[in-house]
Length: 215
Image 1: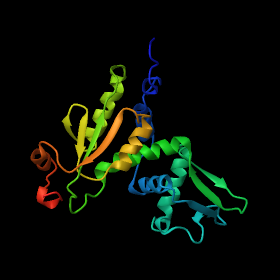
Image 2 (image 1 turned 90 degrees about the vertical axis):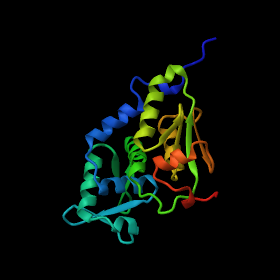
Image 3 (image 1 turned 180 degrees about the vertical axis):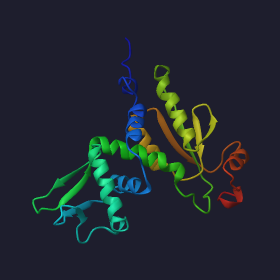
Image 4 (image 1 turned 120 degrees about the vertical axis):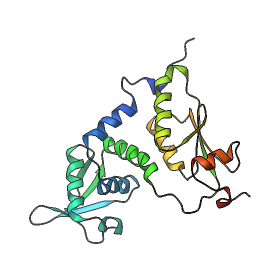
């Protein structure tokens, strides 16, 4: 009996293609990335309208929102709302909640995942190697190529075929990757303190084993 094709290859266009289309449609900035990151992490944003019909933060807004330039925040909200990435929902009290749409949630996930390579690295490496391993069926070759390219672009080292290594915390991003591609059964994550070719990996990432634990 022929086995059903996995959901990874059922769509005419891949997840990555769709997400890249979204990314090309919106010019990102540090403020816009922060807005998406905060909304994705569940930091609620409530607004009111001024007499001139401009959105403004409600009294008691979280400090994360207060730290963003007001004009830049309004522009980000207007842009994302126009692109269908978020919606502004009015409460019975007259205030407004800013929430991600389904499209916006996906866009925010891939934006945060892509930002892994831009995140500040810890001053001291903890000596732990993060490994991402995958076993993708041959009929999902397109997905396998996309996954390999994505991990390499993010700075992972290709330790061997289907095994990539990274020295810094990235579990949340890997989980996000599994959700984006619906690939929980194909992609695995592990953390190890010792690995063959340890010295070569340290050289690749400009690390010193004495800076981590396990000596």
